[in-house]
Length: 318
Image 1 (tube, helix red, strand yellow):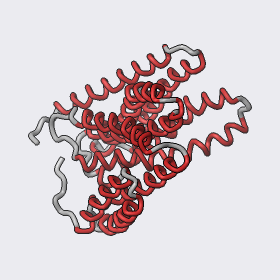
Image 2 (cartoon, helix red, strand yellow; image 1 turned 30 degrees about the horizontal axis):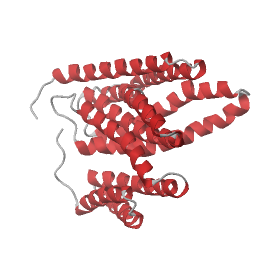
Image 3 (cartoon, one colour; image 1 turned 120 degrees about the vertical axis):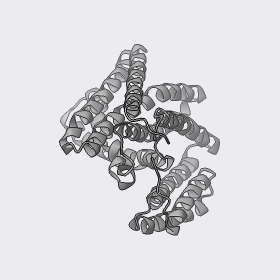
């Protein structure tokens, strides 16, 4: 993909401030990181209005920094040590970012620009998961009143509601201008969808890590191993399906409703994975977890084969 070389001073400022803000927030330099985040947001809005994609990225980075700074400060004050926070961040984000590079490099020709991939990843790690949590809570409240059984509510949330809500919120970043203009091949939708799912999975892994942090380092490591292999690949594979439908809609000028079957396939894949995982919880057997992980591996293998096949149909030089 060719990235535009025309960037405004506001866009460059937003991007640089956003990157610095995130880095400083990770080292708990909160005041400076928040100031830089505000600058990134303000200049990002101006640059975005001028059509500069750097402004959009800086805006998202600024918002992400504010959320991250508040979350890390709260954890440090109420719950975790700084070393534990760093450990959880590494376990949650490093494997998913490695997967991002792996998915990107599945393409041999016209690989996607890192700026767009980072944008989608951060969107998935922030806006997608926040909106998913809110929507799931909105569905959970009436469900608890209607179904007077805690186990049934938990299963319905995990197997029906969560897959539908999460597969709705994860690919929304693909509808933004910065991503739409980069989708000019069918396989691009698979790639951006997968990366959006990986961003979502990174934050989800972080939340699970925080929840189980008091169980000790052995439990945390076991948790992240299973989630890195299983959940990360599942989130990437499922959202890639919706992305595939979306790229077909954009490039082949299909009706918008043509996305629906792929969205439903994404929900179905997510539901099957969660059903396998839940079977282990309620039967105290490990076979469900193994089945879930194998399912995720098969799914991502198919996604990568599809990307390679589509990529070979129109080889061009970078």
